[in-house]
Length: 137
Image (tube, rainbow, N blue to C red; front, side, top):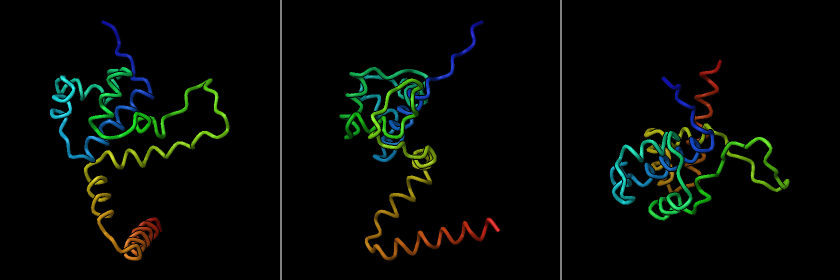
């Protein structure tokens, strides 16, 4: 029996970004699969990084999810030996995309962004930071 190969970190990252964006649009795996002509199980494998997404398929997914293809690579892990020109954008911390990929993180973000008063939003951030500081004592 052959051992399962671990998913490539970039494939996992791209899949997680597909999942995050799909959830942001409140779209089911089944609905995305239907739009792609795939089963929801195939979408699930893409999102877990178990199956690699080809270039044309990624372009199709980007169109359906209304984002540029580059969206899926934002914050991607660095590939060993890859040249950077010194102007490359620093990857966003993985915890941000992990948080946004959860239903609580997505709900909190959506609700927070609906608050129009910038001062109130700032006070909420201050409150949460104070709660964290108090809990770390």
